[in-house]
Length: 151
Image 1 (tube, rainbow, N blue to C red):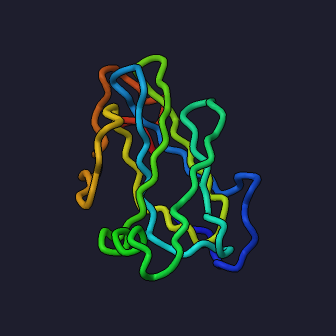
Image 2: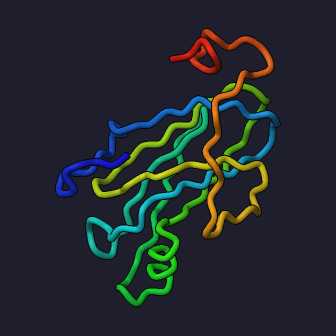
């Protein structure tokens, strides 16, 4: 997902929002790793950002890397990986169905993938997890949009 055109004003109100229904099997702290394409900030010297929240928690602002030039080691690594990786931590009170929300607050950010991991020390590095396929949860959630009864 991205906001176009790149010259459009930012969406600070959170108008561009993605919502993912996710089934988390354990409570505790979960790390969200957001994979975006490496891009230059829309305003030099001010890194772009997005907001992220799990369920009804207060959205966290996550800043993308602030590259200083084409010889910036972080820029070079992200271009080779074809991704800029950012992290945020979210506390899950109980296992079950949850909603992950991501707001793009600046044009030009290209969101590629999201990974939730209960091991906050995990480093996806250059590899990336395979896409999670829809599976039938432990009990009928057909009314929630997940499983065989969803859209």
